[in-house]
Length: 78
Image 1 (cartoon, rainbow, N blue to C red):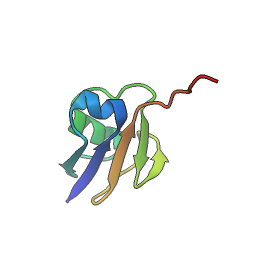
Image 2 (cartoon, rainbow, N blue to C red):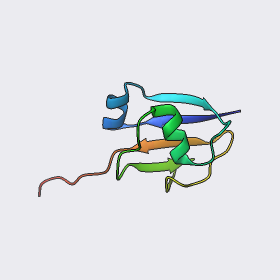
Image 3 (cartoon, rainbow, N blue to C red):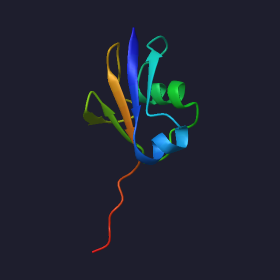
């Protein structure tokens, strides 16, 4: 029983990994996934997706889910 974790952009660079697979035991929500996989506090304004749909960090997760973390989106110059 596992959850696939994906990291994008600057988060991927900071953690030095693109993907992880973690065991479900003790995992209740997306924030728990981050804690177990990243090992550091969840940065403010991090975007979370569960099964390719944007979600809140307190979104429940279960076996077989994919949880992704993205840095906040910033705008460009006009």
